[in-house]
Image (cartoon, rainbow, N blue to C red; front, side):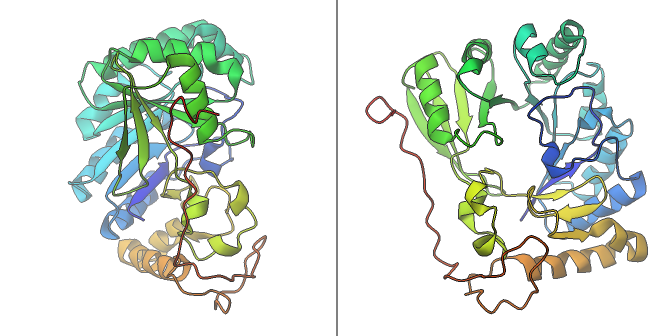
Length: 347
């Protein structure tokens, strides 16, 4: 993998009911600055080309601009971005862009004030945070950078709110990334496509957009300029890792991103659902520096990547919660893609 998603902090001033926290459920934690810098440098040395800071909300971390600036020095050609709910002070935008950040993505947890308040599992000052988010987004857009907004679709009850977001985004240089709620097993890429057809009608055109550091996505473009992204491929069908063929959670794996994650603890984790398959990268850096961390990184991936061979006799001992019956040829992968969006096959 050449894409590293970094949990800069698990702290956040929101409490969204469907938040999965990138599989990092610990509240209020973050890796100390020196170890975080070292782990990021290991990633750069190992060939990571795409870094994304998340959380929690990464902008809650006061020293994030310094972390970004140092990462930009050790990885000058990397793509560096962050995901935020946008409920922070607007002036924080300037510091991270000045430090070398390429772009900011937003997680829109309810577009209208009412929907925003309804998605919180604890009482917040929804009107104040909603207004602060609007100011924050306007500040980001003023920079003219590429911008994407993420919206988690949880069911038909979200369609009025989602349609309001789509109306807002249509005239702007913004891509709306519509995601299905991973906790709702009845949702899928097809369900998202049907919802978009109900709300916006058939798109003007469809594009497949490859990502050399992740997985291909589908973009739908309407005549009013609206662009919507759907993640139609799933990591569980990609069989990227040696544990995938025998993983008991593979049937429910709908993750549309091919990336590894650096958790707040400094552990490198292949999959949100598999904390048992991880490398304590921070410990390796603490004990031996960046070189030792790079060696540990390389050994970890040498062991954990799916090399395309039959893993019936795979040498690694099964980890806790893992099915050790690895059979079948992993080299041939069938991707079960949903039908093309359109009137004739919307059902």
